[in-house]
Image (tube, each protein chain N blue to C red):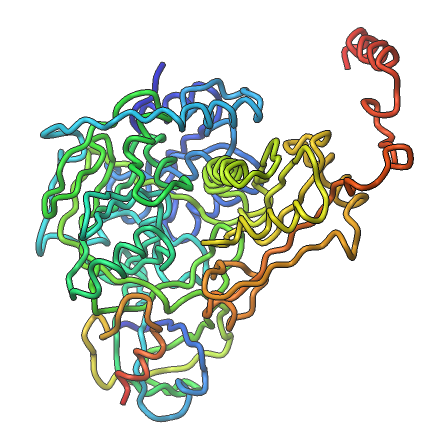
Amino acid sequence: MVSNDFRSFLAAIGSSGDLVTINDQVDWDQELSGIGRLSCERDGPAFIFNNVKDYAPDWRVATNPIATWRRLAVGLNLPAEIPLRDLYQTYADREGTMIPPVIVSDGPCKEVKISGDEVNLFDLPVPMVHDGDGGRYLGTWDLVVSKDANSDWVNWGMYRFMIHNERILTGYPRPTSHLGKMLLDGYVPLGKGMPIAIVIGADIPSHIAAAATFRIAGNEAELAGGLGGYPIDLVKCETSSLYVPTSAEIVIEAEIYPDRIAQEGPYGEYPGYRSGEMGNSVCARVTAITHRRDPILTLDTTGFKDSSATTTSISGAIAIKRRLEKHGVPVVDVYIPPEGGVHLAVVSVRKGGSEIAQQVVEILTARRALMSKIIIVDDDVDVFNMSAVIHAFATKCHPDRGTHIHRYEGRANALTPAYSLEERVAHSGATVAFDSTWPPEWPVETTPIRATLDSMYSPEIQKLVTERYKLLGL
Amino acid sequence: MADEYETFVRDTTRVLSGRDCVLTLRDLTEGRSKYRGINVRAVVSRPPRAGEPILWIRSVVGLKDPEPCSLRIVEELPETFVGAPYSDYFTALERAQR
């Protein structure tokens, strides 16, 4: 079964055993998101809640659609059990094939239309995600459409948005994000409001494309088509010229003010902390809401090992690999482990050493610096095997000459918990590369040999041992 | 007016000065509109004064001060503050206070 909308995706993860349905009443105020949060921490299933306190049963909420590799695979119409390396490779292959979207005149997301004074964001069962958040977050697993004021460039991004009152939202697309760039370069100087559309519950490839690390002026709708293997149907918004995926459960149309702000945050974010990055946001007025009948509001219970741990990790790792290749680094594989909160990358190289480590850290911090730690290993270490990576890091990284620190101003990640409040406000930070490779100048005769089966035993013994294991069923 | 609110502050002394100050409040009344935001000019008291709504203060990372306050709302303000996108919200509060 090919899933090409959110409901068929839910059916698919139901079939693979990765979805739990809850029909008992659950409170939108922390209880619902707490259930989703614990599931993330335990690598557990997604949930759909059919009975949300204070709301009619025609409103449902689904949590953490693809917070595990299994569900990400199903979202891309792959087997849930696909090996991680194969999942990465499939993603990389599909990313190179763009499929243009198709414009249609109507679709499921237009089944119910609300506009003007009828708009009330509290009519949506928007959860309070964590105790102590600044408000209720509507945009957690979303897709925000915006258009450049001076060109045809349309951006899809995944950005957080919080309810301020019935019609006002505040949000934190970073100022260095593509949306932030469009807003600051094209709309604010002219004092013009910027139309946006917050799309909730579209097909999975569309959300993955929105969250992906993708080039400026790239077309994420085409990327989504490539990732899913089918064109995305788009339909025009009610109150702007933006286009949204027709299969979406809910679409919030709004306009970002060029000259108004309101409280946003704090919010427990994808690095796994609430870092106090409030007070640097955008503010938008909702102009219309459209949705499917019996809509499903999607929620990423953001924090340790949330959905960004898979989506941003896979696209970010592939983007890092391509960037390093472009600069001539002898890169073999890149992995961003979910446990690292998109702050840690593992890079394997054919030839290591200090110069390569320094080059890697400089390349990966040139524009935006989201990774604060990079572990560089030799290519005999499988980057997807974190036991092997930790072993290499712990034993091969010289505590002094193996550490390469690169400091920068104005482009650091304000969500990095290690930074002081002042550093986060100023976007001031650093990235460190841990060179866990053998120095290339060391003679092979004296370079230590790893005491593992694949390194310290003859091929004949390795074969005997693996055959014995097979016979023993191990 | 609600019985209970919360607010997020960078500098607690500004709020607890005894003079009126500009704040964003989150309405903690149970129901569909819980956590609705309003901007106000208000005088905050600690310990709480009888007959006034309770106010809980949270830090910029959302840590709740266990000691409650109360507040007297002097004036409800517009739903947004003047300020360019990404400009500092706390500075906007102080500007609105002057």
